[in-house]
Image (cartoon, rainbow, N blue to C red; front, side, top):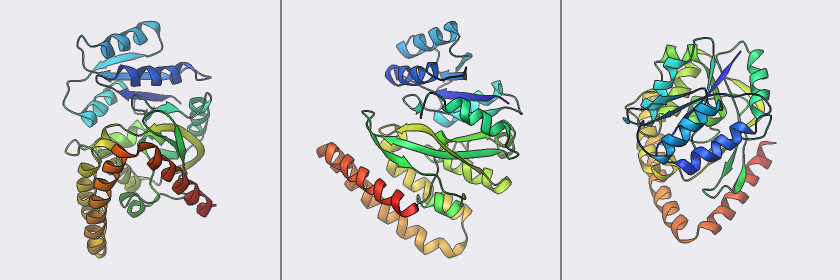
Length: 273
């Protein structure tokens, strides 16, 4: 049972090279699709070299209408029985045997999607800690950013992506969380006891936290009962203030905030055990 890796990239040669190195280091052959605009950029030229070398199966044209639209484009090249794993440019597999391990696990799965834990790194690649996956997925925990899972640490059977209509392109940042919640309404996700990837901060979602916060406000209204209304508004206001403070501190004291994140994540993981 094949897992197809999909990487969407635009004008990020450095990030694509990092992901390519991780793909080439895997202990088994990775079925890899790259979606990127067809232009004269160094990113596209490198993607073409990856295709010609055989490391990537195919480079697919991105018509430059957004990240999630590009992620949807890749689905036309994937069969209903195959699994899909989205890794952004700059993100990496957690280890050299990760793709092989996850592939073997989903071969035994009777579900339609599965998730695992992931490592979090700063924009320079320094590992900050491990985000442990919850035992059971719960939409309210996801949408309040508590025991959340990352789309980079999630694999979907193409069949369920077709059922939910792929990523909702009205969202700029939170379409992946919307997709995960929609998938959970059809099929209970299976937890994999695997650290699946290294998620690198500093990308689009990190830089656009406030857009994501507004979109999550909408998603909580859409998916959660009316009893969550007051908490929803409170959480939106709290995160709005927090995001502004974090952005300012990140610019002035980047190393200090990384230290705080390391301590916070370590404390969280101890409490989960």
